[in-house]
Image (tube, rainbow, N blue to C red; front, side, top):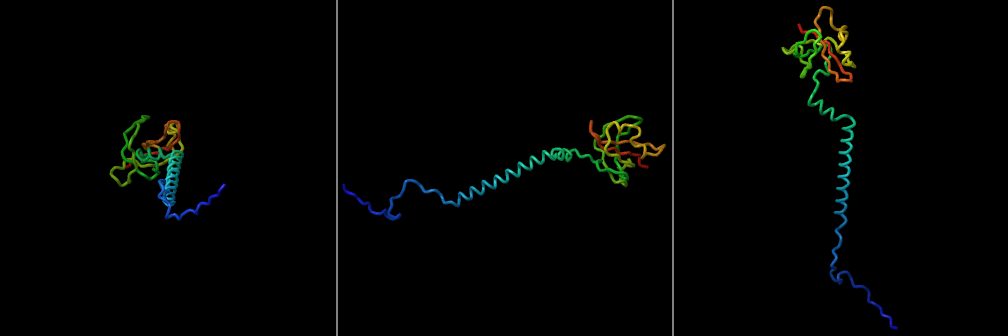
Length: 160
């Protein structure tokens, strides 16, 4: 039995070209990996913002932006622009009530009191603004209260 010895492999330069293409350098893969990480982070932030928005009422905030209650921050000493005229125990829905400068020609009512945490039943009671409106003075109650919830009421008198 004869043993054969193979010559040592030739240098790389002498090898015939391979039909299999070499894999791309490691750097482009690192870039792809980095961009995937970045997309993952951005995606996580977007998901977090959506969840936080739903939890903390971003829908409500957007709704308030488009349908803002301009009297929500009114307080005693402020003035309110024209409202529909009501008499006796009438009640009328008002859209677009707003606080204006008391020196403005649009100012029709003085806010003489504000009561927070009221239900609709409390706002409709004769005592709602009793402490703010003097005897013999014509007074009005403006309130913003959702059914079944609490809100605020403003005690108003006609501006002199």
